[in-house]
Image 1 (cartoon, one colour):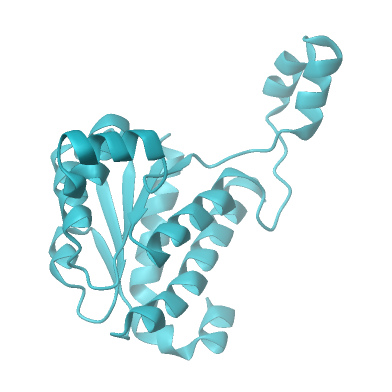
Image 2 (cartoon, rainbow, N blue to C red; image 1 turned 135 degrees about the vertical axis):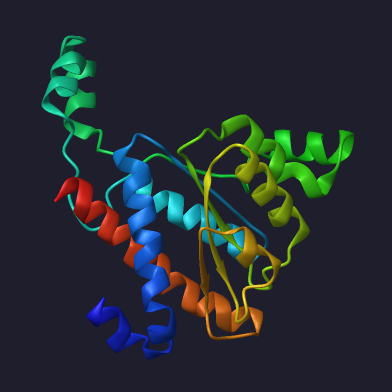
Length: 205
């Protein structure tokens, strides 16, 4: 955390919330849960980025469980190749892709409820929903949050200053001290890089 704050001193006011989000996600993964992510525009790209850091190696090597490697190796040369190449993963899903599902649901039902439909389908008690919304008021993100709460999921939000309506629905809201969208997004990346790196360290160091 010290290095993060030295490079991004603007994050000092939300230091405690960043640590709370890390604790919540660590507990989610320890209990066998997964992370769902949603956001719009640049925040959608950040969701995909986060999934990429969690589902494969980020800074550290992630060796497979020896028992799993042994099971793979029974499938000859191809199984041995899998055992050598696969890495440990922290399960995470971005709700911002899935173009066939998203466009079909938007066309047939309601475009503002596309994220909520995916939370309904993927989410379980013990999972965490990460919402990136610079305003804190994006309607599709609010609908996703209501659905997650109804499913007894945890919610982490990363927003601009004030937190908007999503703050009141979140177990942890990291309300970054900026208001303009691009400035909020500039601070969002170091926050999730820090969290992803610490999660990797906790489970694979």
